[in-house]
Length: 126
Length: 132
Image 1 (spheres, rainbow over the protein chains, first blue to last red):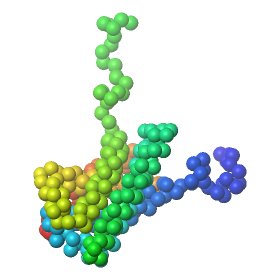
Image 2 (cartoon, each protein chain N blue to C red):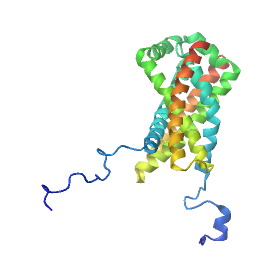
Image 3 (tube, rainbow over the protein chains, first blue to last red):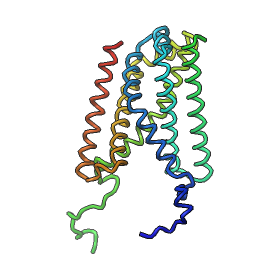
Image 4 (spheres, chains in turn red, purple):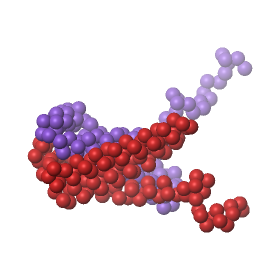
C-alpha cells in the first residue's frame, strides 16, 4: 500500500484532524483509571445511600476518601465529556455541534470544580 | 407480477419492525446509552457532594429523595449502568489490543458482559449494605 503522506506529516502523526490520537488515547487512559475507582465508588455509594449528614461528611472528610473521590469525580467527568463529544460529533454538525461540545465541556468543569471545592470544604473544615 | 399472486414466503429485507437486533448491536447501543446516563449521573453525584458541603437542612432535602423508592431505583439503575459500561469498556479495551474480533468470540464476550454486570450490581449492593 502506498503512503501518500509527506515524511513531515508522517513524523508529526497528527492526521487530518490535526490532533492525532490524543482524544482516543485519553479516553482509554481515563477508562483504565476508572476501573478500580468505579468499583470502590459503587460500593461506597450503597454504603452512603441511607447515611445522614454527619456520617456522610465524616466519610467524605477522611483523607483517603477525599483523594479517591476527587479522582473519581474528576476523571469520571473528563471521561464523560470525551464520550459526549463523540456523541455530539455523530448526531450534530456545524454551529450546533461546536456549541454543544463547548457547553458540555463547560458543564463538566463547573460541576467538577464545584464538587472538588465541596470535598475540600468538608475535609478542611470550612 | 400483481400483489395477489406474489410468493408469500420470501425473506423480508431487514427493517426496524421486522428485524431482531443482534446481541452485538444491542450492546453497542447500550454502551452509548449507559455512557450518556452515567454522564448525567456524574453531575447528580457532584451535586450530592456539594449539598453535603452545605447546611444540614439542604442536605436532608436532597437525601430524602435518595432514600425514597424512586431514589433506590435510580441508584440500582446507576449501579447497573456503571458496571455494564465498565465491563463492556474492558471488552472494548481487548478489541483495541486486537483480541476477540471473531464473531463467536464477540458474541460470547457480549453475554459475559451482561451476566457479570448483573452479578456485580447485586454484589455491590449486598457488600455496600453489609459495610454500612
